[in-house]
Image (cartoon, rainbow, N blue to C red; front, side):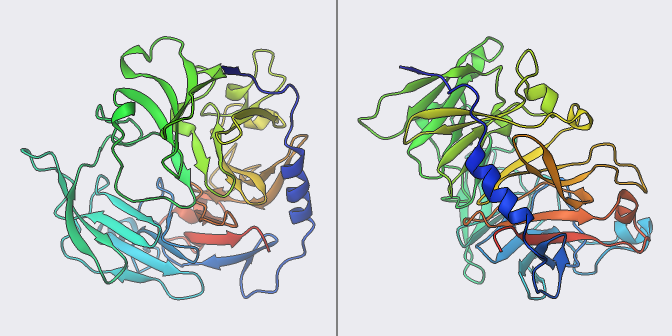
Length: 375
């Protein structure tokens, strides 16, 4: 069967939740950011292109240095990248393991109460193709050898690593092989029951229908009314707290518009209900060509953009509620990639008030922060 989205669906329930959120008074807390309860780590991120990772509902793991922001570029060169564990409301700590080798390609993952990281670098054994990692709950790490695809969002030929992100509860930090999806561009849900199949790798230059493929017996496949030109596998998200796939093109809002640009936005695919919905967003001109980090939360869709920001003027850059008829600024500033925990009620990110605060030797703060969007 082929599934088409209802016309004109605009996500009113999510909008109502976000409108209620915007009417909240600032929470009584030692630290707030905008109208949100907030926590600040004080740790200058050493991999700002990466989102921090939720170990559990209260703890983040990321690359950093306990010394805070360096006061000069020369001091920054002397820093040692460490694995930082930060429980909200407590002082961050470093996970000391001399086998961790500082490298952009070094594997680091935190999910479902376990941390995993490569030891001795990220180069696999030339014979077995396996990489040595430490994995387990903090303080109970064990050594293992696993296959890790170091190409990031591109899946291995073996179907080892799905593209996109699983937001919320991730079953494991170790990519799970799925032989049925070998040689395909695909994204997995958080339960191992469904996959969105975008195309066979060798046919990705063609226009291919998007297919929902159940990974459990007895459920038929479903071809949806989309192609791999309508949505981008690398920007696909599955949220465990909604049970939905979120599909869109990467880039600004104009890049995700209909041909007549009447409905820029995203699609949701409910694998259990076998339902596809289209969600339209307000296409502000300043968002047309700027990449968005669009992220579902328990309160609805939120996005971060650096649109038109300069060294000392943030312009419209910031964190926004993505409502059907307008984009409402929640917090101005410069945001790194967003991360959501299993509940969908918090957001974590690297944050600076303006670009100038990200420079070494400046007084402004640039650190990993988290906010509660449900209080």
